[in-house]
Length: 139
Image 1 (cartoon, rainbow, N blue to C red):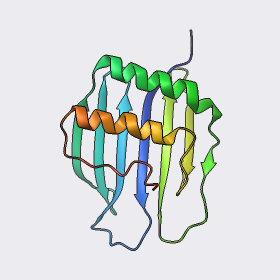
Image 2: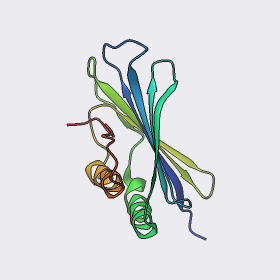
Image 3: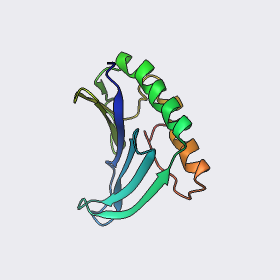
C-alpha cells in the first residue's frame, strides 16, 4: 500500500517586534480523512485567540493531497534565509507510515509553495470565511 500524507500543518510565526499579547502565530492544519481545515491564531503565550473549522469538499481535498504527494519529495528540510525582524514558517506532513516530514523557512517558498497557498486560499474562499491567513508569509 502506498504511503499517503494524512495531514498537513503549516505554522507561520511573527519574529518581528511585538509583545506577547499580540497574535504572533497562525496554524493551519488540513486533515485528509476528515475533509477539514482548522485555522488557529495564537498569541505569544501560545494561547489560542481564535479558531475556525472549514469543511472541504472531498474532491478538493483529494486533489490537494495528491498534489502534495507529487511535489513534497523534492523539498529540502530548510529554506531559511538570514533576515532581520521577519517571519518564519514550518510545514509538517504526517504520513500513513507514521513518518513526519518537517520543512522550515523564512522568506523563501518551498518548491510549489505558491500552488499550495492557492489550494489553501481556495478552501477559505469556498467556505466564505473571512480569515486571511499569512501562510508562508512570503511576498
